[in-house]
Length: 363
View (cartoon, rainbow, N blue to C red):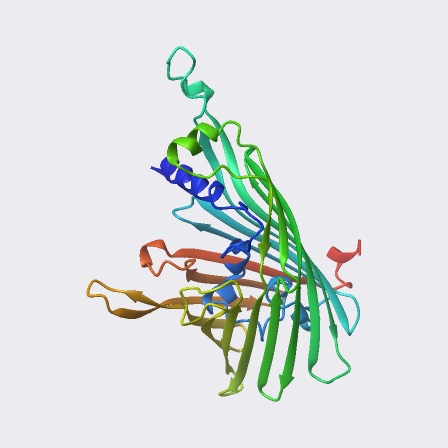
C-alpha cells in the first residue's frame, strides 16, 4: 500500500512542476507548511511574537530577541502515515546587542520510492532484483540577518533563500529568493509583518524524462520541458496582545492574515487578484515554564451534498516545557486536510548556549 502511495505522490509532483514560465499556485509550497511545534500548535500564528531560532523562518526580525549568545533548534515531523518526512535544523547567533544572524535548513521529502521501470526484462520476466529506489525531496537553505532599529520597539530583518528541489534523476531545480520582515512592540501589543518571496522566487527546472516519455504519452500527460518556475510574493500581517492574569499565569493571543498574490485560493476571503487566509493562536504560560497552546486555521467554505457551503476549520493543540536553557515543544496538527485520521505528532527542541559555557569554547 505504501509503495502505491509513494508512486502516486511522485507522479503528482513530476506532472505539476515547472512546465512554463507562468506563476503557478502553490509554488514552493513546502515552505508554507510551517516549522516548530509551538507555531504549528498555534496554527502558524506567531509572526508577531517569534523570538527564537525558529525566527529564521517565521520572522527574521525576532532573532534580535534571543536571550543567549547562541540558540540551536530542530524539528522532525512525519505525514501520511510516515511516508513524507519534514525536518528543520536552525541556529541563531547574537552578533551584538543590536544585531543577530541565523542559518537554517528545511527538508520535505518522500524517500524509498520504488523505480519499477526495469521490472520486466526484454524476455518478459519479472525481475524484482532490478527494482531501484529514489527520493523526491525539497530543500531550503536560509541565511538570516536582523537588527534593532533606533526607533524604540522596532526590529527588522531579512532572509536569503536558496532552494533545491529534486525528483530522483528525473528532475531537479535550483532557486533563490528573499524575505523581508519587521516587528514592533507597543505596550502590551506586538505587531509583525513578513513579506515572503518579496522579489518573487525563481526555480530553474531541468528535466530528464527519457525513461518516462512512454508513460507520459500513454497517460495523456504533457512532457515537461526545462523552464523557470516563479513563486509570487505572500504577505503576512500579524497582531498579538499579552495578558497578565497573575505573577504566575500569562497569555498571548495572536491573529495573523496571510495575503497571497497568486490568484484565487480556497480560503475565507478570496478574489481573482489576492486571497486572505486568517488564523488565530493562543498560548497560556505558567511561570514561563509550562505552556498550553491552541489555534484555529485553514478556514474554508466547503460544499456539502445539498450544494450549500459549510464553514470548516482546522483546530490544533500543543504544549511546551522550558527548563533553564532547554525547551521541548509538542503539537498535534496536520497540513490542512481537516481529518483527525491524518493528524501528526510534532516535536521540536531548542537549546541555548552562552559564550561563558565550556560548550561554546570554540566560538
